[in-house]
Image (cartoon, rainbow, N blue to C red):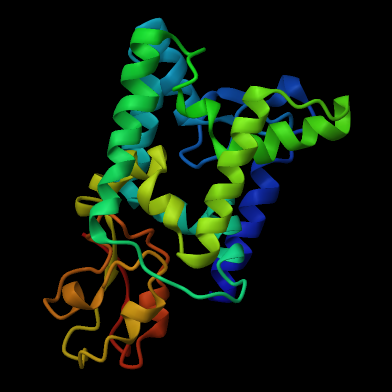
Length: 264
């Protein structure tokens, strides 16, 4: 992973979770990354939690939807690659030595099922207290709320906490073997932002005239998005739903004299 992206992710982790003053928090505003708004140190709300709650109230979350759309249209999924704290954790656990594999392409559609069912429809019909709500199994919530609460209030395990912890362990174990597997398969925020990659103003400029089809960029893509197929056609490699706009393909290219970031 390029150093500058690691620095950006680490800085974002610290900044997003540095609120020691409840009165100063802005949890009426969503930050389109997977970061639980129930975390005592979080500045902003998580759009997933907002969507779940508003669905249960059967009210449309205009501000949350508008925030996600604005970020997506401007930058696509760049927050997934450069800002999301949970994405940083997944990048780190994948560095643990182990056999590696890439998930089949069809698994990328599962996150849309998760978004539709566990974030919108089931909370709408069953309420936000349903065991089928995404917040009930959110691995970020387990990491940021459930585990810290053990140290603050003492270890007390019940069914709800056990379910979250089991989901966290499963996601991290899968992340060891398959890079960014949660982002590709299950993340509702990824599902919200993924289609906007096709129209976002942020575009990674391909090495026009320089691409030799070596496929080196494919081996560096954390989501297995095969950016070379788009680069050979002169299309921005981030014009794909699974791209987290990490720019790793750009940094990996051996023939990148004409590359850069552009907007269009």
